[in-house]
Amino acid sequence: NAGVTQTPKFQVLKTGQSMTLQCAQDMNHEYMSWYRQDPGMGLRLIHYSVGAGITDQGEVPNGYNVSRSTTEDFPLRLLSAAPSQTSVYFCASTDGAKQFFGPGTRLTVL
Amino acid sequence: SQQGEEDPQALSIQEGENATMNCSYKTSINNLQWYRQNSGRGLVHLILIRSNEREKHSGRLRVTLDTSKKSSSLLITASRAADTASYFCATVRAGGATNKLIFGTGTLLAVQP
Image 1 (cartoon, rainbow over the protein chains, first blue to last red):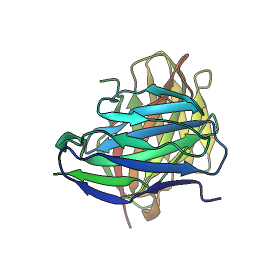
Image 2: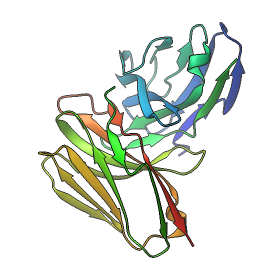
Image 3: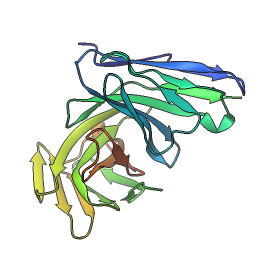
């Protein structure tokens, strides 16, 4: 099993550009989540999903959209990138107990 | 902010010593989990303790939970240089979605060889 995979690993955007961060898991987990990690802040939940077709907002959802059309994929869309969205983004899936994290995407918005 | 807090923010010890990290949280919980993050990598799950449990062990790890004080501690015994990492606690709120975790701010542990 590949576990949780994320692409790209690194990305630089200009303010106002849009992009999609990809996340996929091959463990048939129903639950998936997106977090951002900023220095000194720990991880903060952006959006999460409890199954295909079901998504909900986390702690810091503004400026981000998600969809969950399949069990495997949970993409995160930045609609109009802002410098405040410079961060490291982690996707995770869970079997109902522990979470399995992807390797992260380091995003810089200029 | 909903985030919990961890204490200390940073800890430096010698190989072979024990390391203790503390976590405080704000709401009633279903469970509390501890994760490790090596520099530049994703998080790895270490241990989960449910709200009706008071202590749990896994190898060199010992976790305690005091729901009356809304606090938890992680003890790593006989530390090794490979234990050098950031450690985070995370809680699942009582009645909340199982994947809606609230993370603490982390403790950076440095184990000197």
